[in-house]
Length: 408
Figure 1 (cartoon, helix red, strand yellow):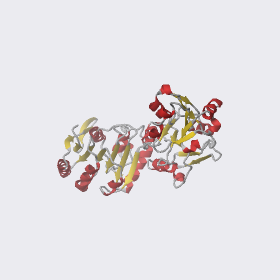
Figure 2 (cartoon, helix red, strand yellow):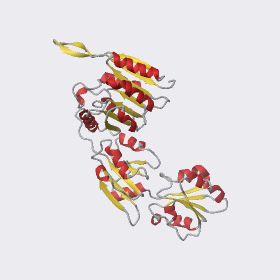
Figure 3 (cartoon, rainbow, N blue to C red):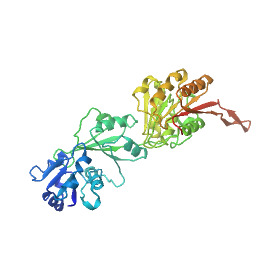
Figure 4 (cartoon, rainbow, N blue to C red):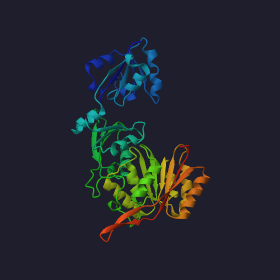
């Protein structure tokens, strides 16, 4: 078998070295995307376009390379979010020669005069927004994003706006290395409704985080650190137990229904790197408070929905975990709707109750649905000053009902 050559074109054939050009000139079979093949219209080699099934197309390579010189063309660098690893997987490293080149990230940072050794680079090509969420949750100060037809610059802008990143800056670099190359700086709001070349890379400079009056975000935030309406906040001790009962893990999606000022959502963000939190609140002023608290602590994976459950739940993404902190009289309708959206397989729901009626409603719904459950009664007392000393002031007892599907 003749070793297959995988050649990175960089931004265009102008970036090819003499050695790589010689490899392409001597090819008897050229394999690559239609755009890359179009750079060589007069080449006499047989041309095989990589379509929607690249693995199936590349499966032909062993037979072709038995007696033909095969060259696979790649954009940028073959081994950086490129076709190189797939060719190596199919043929084995001993049957492949890789010719590297510059990447879109390198080219973009050169245009922007920006160092990139400590930049965060993610690809959304054929993926969800999770890699971007993970990068932002780690506090990256600049993120370079490979896009695709679904994750366009406009879609990225809308995603940022939903997470309170109105002050972020975007740079869309189109057609790098081409005669039509263009660089555009804009805000997420300015990117709405705009169309860009399909060949683009997006640079995100997240909104700077100002000074935090309540200090850094941490578990057990004091109530006074959050904007809130009077006493409408889940107390720190209750938050701790609720978060434990939800068994949160990276990458999961959490609904926080009746979110109030968002105290549970904010602390949950620390336990859900790369995950997604949807805080639902029917009161417009309280929804605004959640947004203010989100901005104060720089939380990037929290979305706020102003709406009334269960009507607004139909349009939300399927959750892995649900916390209900404000069901009230509607709990008997909300909880069945929630269970209907949770898939069986380890999903969990938790809710708080201060009234016996609420507790019995929750237990009845979970039992009817065949879910396993546990009820925890939390009674908390806090020290308060009195006559030069201190006494223990009791808080209202709270029931925490947790339910889960499956055996665990």
